[in-house]
Image (tube, rainbow, N blue to C red):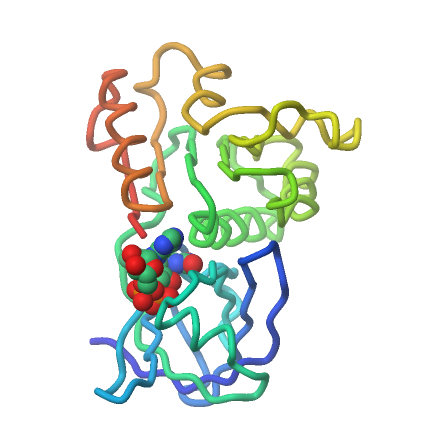
Amino acid sequence: MLTNFRTALSHKTHLNSNTYLYHFDLIEPKEIIFKPGQYVMLKVPSSKGPVSRLYSIASQNTVTDSFDLIIEIVPGGLASNYLFSLSEKTEVIFQGPAGMFGLKENEKEKIFLVTGTGIAPVRSILISNIKDQISKLQIKNQKFNLFWGLKKFEDVYLLNELKQWNNETMKQFEFKICLSREQNLEMIPENDKKYFELGHVNFCFEKQFSSDLNSFDFYLCGGRLIVESLKQFLLNKNVPGENIIFEKF
Ligand SMILES: Cc1cc2nc3c(=O)[nH]c(=O)nc-3n(C[C@H](O)[C@H](O)[C@H](O)COP(=O)(O)OP(=O)(O)OC[C@H]3O[C@@H](n4cnc5c(N)ncnc54)[C@H](O)[C@@H]3O)c2cc1C
């Protein structure tokens, strides 16, 4: 049974040219219980009645009185236009939470292959697990590897957060940001170069991991076509289908 949430936009943060982080405070009910990886359905007002658009929750699941969304504004898009012109304190209706994308409970090493705003549910999964484990002072002996595809260096956001998790977990969380439309990494500060690669996510992943992919679980998220091609890429490498968990936007 889905719940209707009355919320208010508390603030939005510009992340890159067309991507924003939206922070919504709950008005009624005052609490949202969700599994990291789930989405909410935004109700976009229209002349023919509310129209739904799905957005993955991007925040930690122990914060229950508000949530974050990471949203790419698509030119001419119905929800995009609505969200872009939304002013702070405006009431916004969501339904949810829903969806099956999330961590499988096992000891396997986890590989996240995501592109663009596909980082949203993965941020929730990572922040919820890492913060939970750090607060209990027990980083489980489990590795999380993120490969995040963006086009250009100017598109990058959340870098400090990812670096912080990398430090806090003593490198049990590692990440590479894969830039598909840069010719070189010259513009990146020397200390940060190790977090970047040139090329698409599958290429960056292949550079680092070449054999025995059976011991991993793979989590894919991003645009429909990209997720389908990443899934095929893994199946071609004989990764069993049950080890590939995905969310298509
Ligand atoms: C499970 C799920 C979770 C999702 N989570 C997120 C999320 O966390 N963040 C997020 O930004 N989006 C997310 N999406 C996508 C989101 O639901 C909308 O589809 C997207 O915001 C476009 O909606 P719109 O109403 O603005 O555009 P529409 O009015 O639906 O489309 C307008 C035009 O833009 C095209 N278009 C739609 N999306 C894109 C795109 N990404 N790039 C280029 N053209 C496009 C359409 O084909 C159409 O021609 C998710 C989708 C699903 C299914």
